Amino acid sequence: MTKNAKVSLTVIAAVVAVVAALALVNRPDDTPPAAGAQPDPGTSVPLVRPDSHRLSGTADAEVTVVEFLDLECEACRAAFPGVEQLRAEYGDRVSFVMRHFPIPGHRNAELAARAVEAAGRQGKLDLMYRAMYEAQPTWGEKRDSQREAFVGFAEALGLDVAKFEADLDDPAVLERVRKDRDDGIALDVRGTPTFFVNGALFEGDPTYEALKAAIDRELAR
Image (cartoon, rainbow, N blue to C red; front, side, top):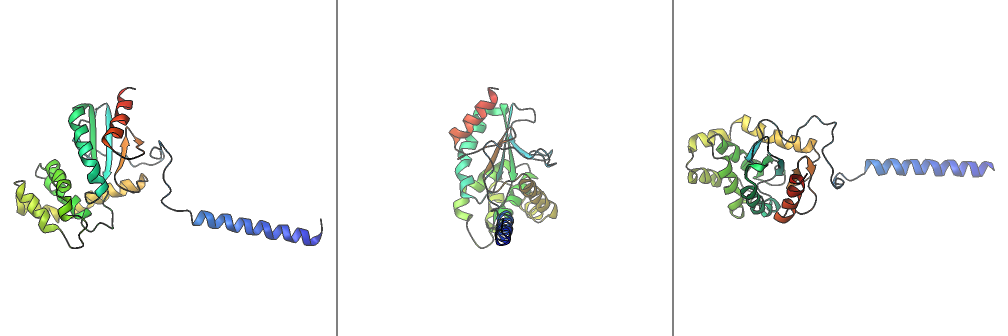
């Protein structure tokens, strides 16, 4: 091999190495997980914590469905009626767990999650959760704070409004919401709604029919 040929090969190898390194550095962060992917077994973050909110079912239910949701997310609201129907149909056989994952771009998503938590301190978490979705067109996608609207929901639900507002501003409530979101990030949740059925990431559109099929497969095992 000539000296010039050796130099050329060396240069080519160097260029290939640089291109490969740049490809790794610039790899997109939103690469979707593989179908059927499960949380990394090496992570210490559980899908369900002892204080996670079970909308229905019990800890020993045959199937557990975990949803990371954003109350201002239109796709989450679209999935909501199907989830409610499934909750009614399966009863205690299936546990539905709600976990907060407010998207930073949604101005009032974190506040809405705090409102649900504050209502939960008065035993009305489920009712506030439903009210948020049912009224979402009136408060979602707004750039100004929707605190007044959420206080109105609290009044309509018969809550102690002074306590509700105090809990809404409690740093522990904010920490509770952000802990859910941090868990979601650690579990590679990249958008909402994200569902896990018995620990397996649910793929596809979370329609009533698709979620029901995934649940039925687990019940049949």
